[in-house]
Image 1 (cartoon, protein in one colour):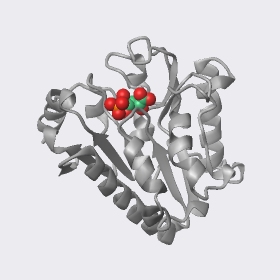
Image 2 (image 1 turned 60 degrees about the vertical axis):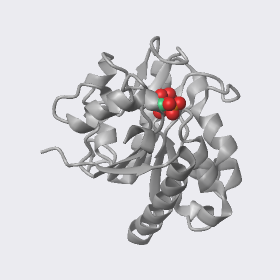
Image 3 (image 1 turned 180 degrees about the vertical axis):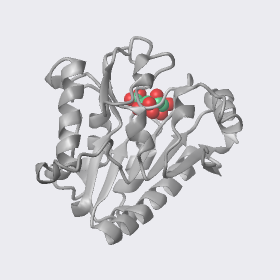
Image 4 (image 1 turned 90 degrees about the vertical axis):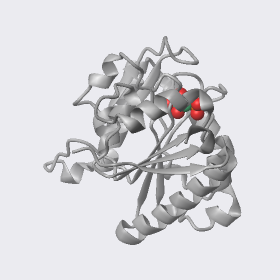
Length: 249
Ligand code: 6PG
């Protein structure tokens, strides 16, 4: 049974971003109250830029206990950190460098340390060590459950670095895989969380803006059972929300 997503529409990307920042701050407060930790997966691309700015603004930032917030990435381009295409670089400049986040709470994808395959294996190791500390290694978990996974969507319906027709979409065991990314923009090797990990999240929040995504978005939201786009396969056991701008509603 596919859970019905919650769709919230806003007049503009700035208003969408402001609302998303408020949503995240409230969720962080609730999760930290509940379990003394908030695990947040950031997305890449350009849409979340304004959101990250809003999260760094005092009005919102002061509501989030950054000491108990852990930051991860849904995907990364295999480029050096100082490359403007780096998802880490985007988030670091706009958000992470502006809030009181302990370095040990930043769990980046080490994109420039080797081949995409090696980076994927390294990141999976990082996640396993975080979510399944050695002490509890007898109670092995199939997949980690993040409190919130932020996602964008490309005009081709890709999300994270899960692209149409890519074998990464079929991965059902690994937590993190390498992607050639030849059809992506920029066309560089990438590393991405897999669908089982994304779908294990307690909450997934898509941020989608731009009329060039309207047709794909309508297909996904109107035909959740038959749509074949990668973003359509995000059907988390937790909550699924789409924050969209009115040009898409
Ligand atoms: C990436 C992103 C990707 C992004 C979409 C939308 O690393 O490319 O994670 O999935 O969210 O491509 O990108 P825009 O927000 O720039 O439209």
